[in-house]
Length: 209
Image 1 (cartoon, rainbow, N blue to C red):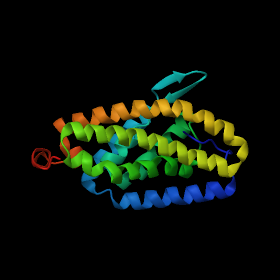
Image 2 (image 1 turned 120 degrees about the horizontal axis):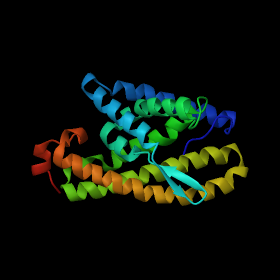
Image 3 (image 1 turned 90 degrees about the vertical axis):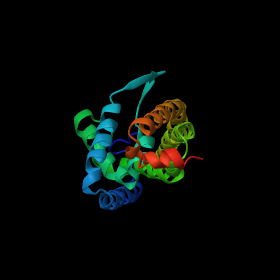
């Protein structure tokens, strides 16, 4: 999912970087003092999850948790991912610094979309239905992220078409894995720490659908 330095054309790089850092700026306005620990924990979870690799044929995939990040952070997912991707780039060589804004955009925009699509369900529906919404959020966040990544590569050069098509194989598997993990996390948080999802115990008890 990480695009490396030097892979993108200048126009694609410029647009992706502009969108990424605009999102970071707006996301920072959504981070009040009480939400800083939540943002920090989710950024750390994203960073650590990248170390868990699953071999898929000649390549491998790693966890992202961006669906869960979108559900818990909303627009604050932009600065959370910026920190995580920056540390991955300088410590492990995942992605790069010149494409940092593009990689943030490709992963954070789908997370925000899932926040709007499934956030109400996760907060207000009964736990089993909320977990199902969590599954779709986790899976869709990965699918949309690879779609944006594919578009960046496609607009850079048609020679990336083979890579784009092949990339759907491991990412389809990752969608299922992320969906299951996000569903499990949503069910756990609804029962143990509903405030992390901004779902109060009252909403959980009386606002069920």
